[in-house]
Length: 526
Image (cartoon, rainbow, N blue to C red; front, side, top):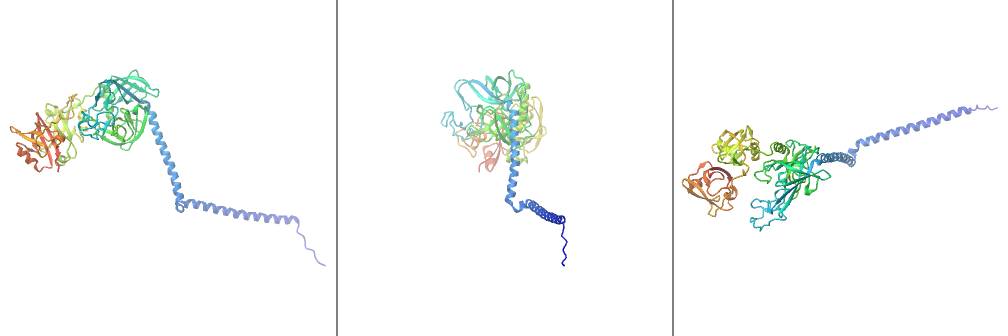
């Protein structure tokens, strides 16, 4: 008889099945989790290694980052320009000066042509010299080339309000000769009359007062000395009568003093490439903070318009002139009574000097003559401070009040010895010119440098000069000048003169003219 196996209860079977299912699910879950962790780890590894394994991807990410940073920087710069326009713009005015004149041409330097447009051509009877492309090399803007028909005429320019009571700074050439001056203010083009408080042609500055003005917006002076080449420069003005025009550039250079505005012009200019055009005269040149660092006054142009180079009077100089005009109504400058010239490199080398300003002529009866200064002296210091440039010496002496004393350190070119001289400063005459009178011409035969010599008693005298020669066209010698010394050698005869000049490559020439002693320095052509 066979035995029956015992049957597993259904309840136990269900338990076993459940445990198996749980174990299977757990295994699957663990496996999936491990795989996920491996994938995450590999993904992070690829991200870390991407710059090495995928240069293109790394470059793209870098460019995107740099682009974002560059865009942000440009937006901030744009915001700065916008801030300057909002801050300074309301203080910039349009100026219209009305004058009644007869038709006349502006004075032109010899051998220079008019700018393109209306005016005399190369055959004009008042322009007998060849056309010179440098007539408009430097040109002030705001003044026309030729004054039109008789009757009231106007010139347009810009100006800057510098206080709430309506004090305006502009260029002298904008309002020079004006009988009625109108100032246009603000976006509503309100026009108000202005009167002239004072002018200073030597720095081309003028101060106006808007009549009946109060609580006007105004701009603040900055420190032009602290401005550096490469700094942002923002010009605001009314070029071509287009009010509130803003242009941007940089400071291209500082200390520009040979800018074609005449030998009597006394300012070391700021050069900028911010676009300025006719009508910008008198407007402000600002820094990135909206402070005035210059007063726009001139452009370099062969066309009469913008060519990338403009000039502004430094704010520190303008502020000083403006304060003096407000206080006294005019500028009174100190005066020595000398004509000066840059130190010749050959003479500087021979004297062992690196800087200084040469004295070309001492005016008879002047403070300099009374103190013992002589033609041929080199000015080294003014009150203990070194002097490097002609305009620097002019400005330093001009800052002294008449009657004050100044101590000069000078070196005599002849004996190469330095000495100190104390000069009582005089008053600069109103009609004081920039140099000696015009030179004469001669049709006689020339010598090596174009001179024809003769004798008058014991003196060697210039009897004539060859037109276009070195002596006639560059040096400014005149018929009748007495030759005193050549290269430190006393000249008592024509043969002594020829001997002193024979093998010279560089010449130091002293002459006497109508009681005045003049000093010339020049190189001879090979």
